[in-house]
Length: 259
Image (tube, rainbow, N blue to C red):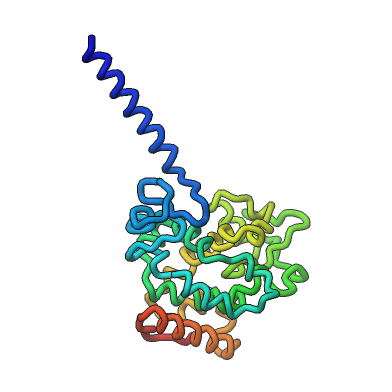
C-alpha cells in the first residue's frame, strides 16, 4: 500500500514536470532574456550559450555570437536620429527572426552575415528606412498573377530590410510565415521581427542558393537591374559595405564581388 502511494506521488511529479517542460518550450521570453535549448528563459550561459533559440544569444556558432550588439550598433548608429527605422529595427528582433529559421540559424557563417548585412545596409540606408521612399505612389500589383491576387486598396511596395515588393512575393512569404501579408502587407512595416522574417524568407529562397557563386551573384538575386552597367554606383556601394563587414567579422570576401 505504501509503495503504491509512493509510486502515485512520483507519477504525479513526473507529469507535473512534463507539463511545465512542454509549457516552457513555448518560451515567450522577454526581449532581454534568452530562450535556452530546453525552452527556458534566462541570462546566463546556460540559457544564452550553445543551443540558444532566441534573444541575445552568445553561444559559439550561434547567430547571436556573430551579430553582436556592437556589430549591429556600428550600422544603425550611422542612420540619422530622425529615421523611422532607428527606433524600429533592433539586433534582438533580427536574432529572434533568424532563430525562427532553423536551417539558417544552424548553418550561417560569418561571410553570409557580412553578405546579408551589406544588402540590409544598402536597402535601408543603415536601417533608416522601414518602407521604400515614395513607395505608396508606385504600382507593385501584378494583376496577371491570379495565385496571389492583390487586395483592394493595399500596396505591395518595398518594406523591411530587403524591401519586399510585389504581390507575388508578399503572398508566398505570408503563407510561409503563417501571416496574411496579401491582406495586411502593412504588417511588415509595423513589427520588426516580422520585417526581418520577411527578409530572411526572401534570403533563403532567392539569395542563399547563389551564395557559393560570390557576392556579385547575390546582388543580381536582389536587384539584377543594377548589374551589367545598370547602376554601377549602387553595385560599388554594396561591395564596399560587404568588404567592410567581412573585415569586421574576420573573414575573406572571396572572389566574384561584382555582377
